[in-house]
Length: 246
Figure (spheres, rainbow, N blue to C red):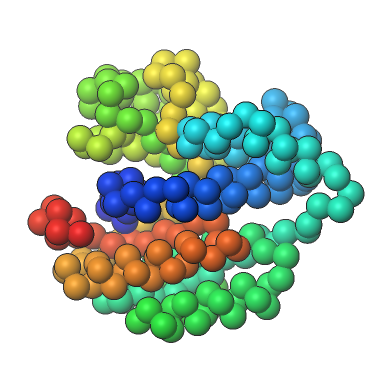
């Protein structure tokens, strides 16, 4: 699978550092607030909140920001967010899934639709591209936690389904319902992960040349700049040569 992990690596290299980090903190905080509001505010009693906190810690979100996001969920005046998934096509027919949290469905739909249109894509119906992905648990570790064999052994012991290792790091996949158990077992063996989340894993991919990848990056950047958008996933496949030129 290329789309998800390679995109994360491009972003890491490209930087857009401070603004992107501030926006990421805001999105992670929103997920924590929503998870705490939907269940128990204690992460030990709320698996979704525990995952959200773990993800935030993996992205170096300060503890006081995490605590504030949980407290916000208990305030009577906190916003009511609705989770919505949008599906569409980007340049070269690449499939795109956009996950959003919004307090105004009409506003978000309008912005997402126009962002697709302005960047050479088109928004489809729900289910129009979802069949090209599987819902999975994704756990990401940096390359320095161990070599591919060591991480593979740890992942097998923990009950994972698959591991992808490269010089950029290790991505471990498991059944979506096993994410909490697998990530906890891996943490005991490998330490804190860089990311622990539910993700869409492509089952089929679309090959992209340099021009198509540049257009796709513009579309994803524009989508992710919207405060309502939590995560964007695509099923692109690109050669190392193309990736190196981005």
